[in-house]
Length: 439
Image 1: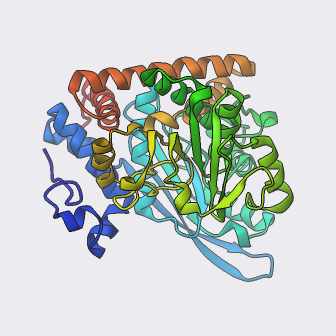
Image 2: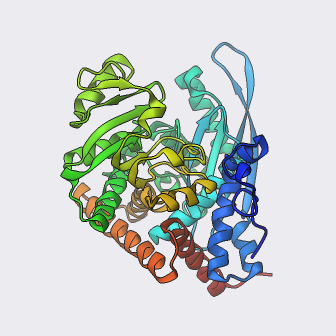
């Protein structure tokens, strides 16, 4: 087995709890967290070290510098990234995020997670990810369009329906995908809808795509409940993050009978032991800009809300929410990871000791990339499915993925996250062995 990262093996108790500043910095590093999970899964598989090197290393990384004229006439240069982690099972697939704190290491980690997520979902994609360092909150719509079009033009040779298919991610949406698709099409002198997914319906988007990640979380939750003999009506849910993933998951889970007792956002949390009216809470946020002050619940501290007793905790915001510092205080039976990388590597063993049933991110939030795959298929066919067909096929693939991970966990005597990584690594490694190494 290759080098094991110190936050997961051989570290002192102080380092394991993140008490030392270096250990804490390492714990929050997404690339090192991905590497730690990879090492553990590859070791359990007894994988050849050479093959591990191939699977661990990104295929290509591109950094671009994007000069843009702002509305006030100033010229600013933004930094953008695109990482293709693997194309062994098909073209790279992964979102593009806009945020002031985007880093190459973060994009690299997210691209590797996409490789494993696509493999767990058993769809014919590899992993990719992109990002631009910018703050959309202070940029106008026209400035965002200029950034998007120049970024797309700069990565043009990297992307394409058979190469790498971007999608929305943090602070990007259908409109950004429409700009990317149009820019690519203008350079190619033909409309190429399959170059991106997450597009508007009128430009080749798929029905059910907007709800897909949240719906996938709900499907995974229903499968997890079967392990405990629970019904949705007996299930209290705490949702952290009320955006597209957490908000849609909350809507769909409430509709299925789950009791959403708390919603946590960046500016506070709202709690109701009897269950929140999610539709009314969304309307309250639309009117006020915040979930706080909602008449149908009581405000509480957002950090304390994370530790409420519940059957399901759904972190659906950013990475590094469940850490060695927060994991010991959790009071959930099921941790359903709607976000990418919400749990750090040192927190895994703490959760295992507490007996928390983890539905890992590369399984729980695979609904989005699964319906992105459906969108890509529909664009290439030129024939589009009804929303019911999309949802039925999503359910079928999510349940199959869940069952495969559970079977791996039982067969190898490992926790769910390790089982998911082992399944993913096994599938990607098998594809590489079949293809051989070109030299």
